Image 1 (tube, helix red, strand yellow):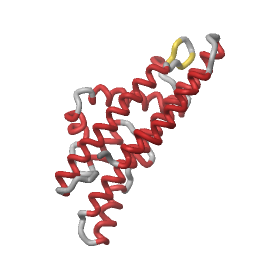
Image 2 (cartoon, helix red, strand yellow):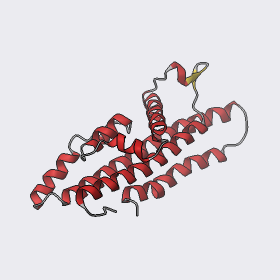
Image 3 (cartoon, one colour):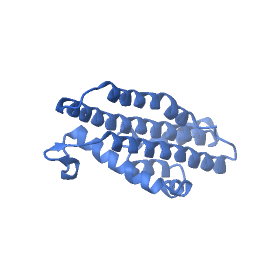
Image 4 (tube, helix red, strand yellow):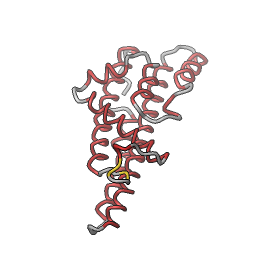
Length: 193
């Protein structure tokens, strides 16, 4: 059984991402107007994907912190423990890049990225794709594109590239859920979900 955060990733969050892919199918034609419109959609899709993945990561972290808090003892200690796990959480204000994710999840008592990399052979590549997605997210949000993001003088992001990032996020979300389930089980001796 998956965590609530992972169920939401597969359900509500995935449905929102599917809607923007559906918008691609609505745009017809092959002229420069279509290319400009699809480029805007691709950029919007990248930002939305980053946002949804950040929300998933934050929700999963909160779910884990709450479960660990239940094992802390007295109710006052529980509240303090959970508050400390969530204090200055990087995912509350920063992008869901590997550094921010690792910093937040390591606070739960595990070497997070080592465990995630060990969960699936593709995860190191997925982590690199996650980093690239966040570079694009920042370039779009701050209107500051590197030379490697541009063809001629315009930023060029393909639908296929955003779809690859989404597949990477899907795989990472599944591994995050697996790794944290195993970690919480080892710490609490009870299946968390």
